[in-house]
Amino acid sequence: MSERNASEKPVFTYAEAAALVTEVLELTEHAYRKVEALSEGGERRGEAEAVVEEWAHAMQSRGIEVKGLWLLDFDNGSGYYCWRYPEAALMYYHGYDEGFRGRVPIQ
Image 1 (cartoon, helix red, strand yellow):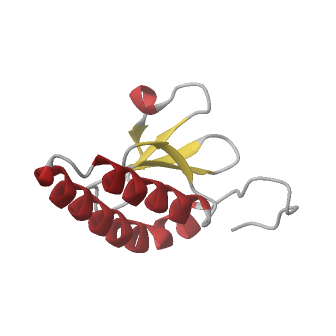
Image 2 (cartoon, rainbow, N blue to C red):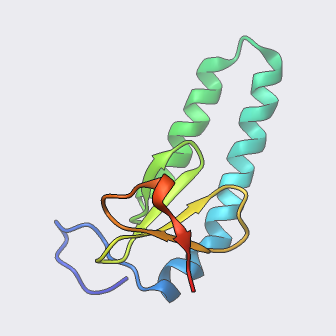
């Protein structure tokens, strides 16, 4: 991540964000499968919520913004590189005001 003050949120270059995607995909896949297995039991909602919270904390601790279930944004200083499970790579961008619906392919 680019140099920053500890109180500021991280700003990622494309290379920095893309380098995290393999790890993010693995962690998200693990959490997703765990939640799916717990959901099959029907009465284990609290456990599934705990898995999602743990996943969200893991993403936030890496400086990644959690925007929804299995949906992440990497701030690049002028908008966000946007990733959603199960995408295998970092392929989308959107400005600060557009949100997920405004995401466009990275050229």
